[in-house]
Length: 87
Ligand SMILES: [Zn+2]
Image (tube, rainbow, N blue to C red; front, side, top):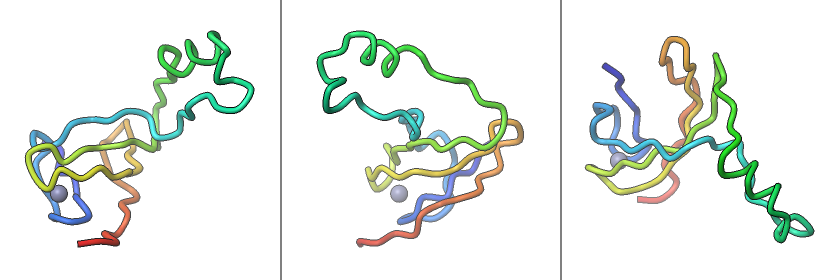
């Protein structure tokens, strides 16, 4: 069981959340906006890191807010959670 600390709601069960993906991936911009290979890499080529990983999560069945955490993929320890800045 994974408990995820929402910055606004506190610690909640993982079933309330939707995984939003890798927070380190960057959308192609500038000269790469028209580059098909850059978009292919952004959409399909992702790493599967063993260890600390920055991720987006959506509190789907809670406050409906997005946030970024750092989670260790080996033991599910959550290392970094932003503080809520807005109510
Ligand atoms: Zn929440």
